[in-house]
Length: 124
Image (cartoon, rainbow, N blue to C red; front, side):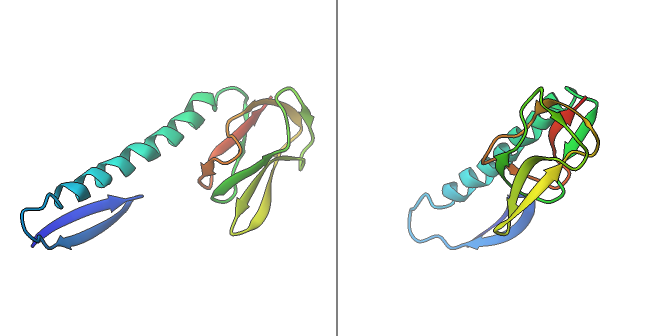
């Protein structure tokens, strides 16, 4: 038996693997453990790169998946207008403009998984 520590989406798991014969089974857990660490890095890079497009940030209030983009770049919005719709636990949650402005950038795409507090759009 071999013991491994595996991290998946920030959660750490201690795993014991039983070897049966001359099998390459211990190699298989090591490959998936490295892959999830690489995947979360890409979504975090996109918001940082585009967060400076406008001075007013429109942030997700909850974690979920981008369901619909309600506004377009260049469109004028008023405080409280929906800019993006997020789906979380089968509920559609509007992410609204915090104040009047013009949409400078849309920093998410339909289907993107987003964390609470992620910048989804910016306004000028």
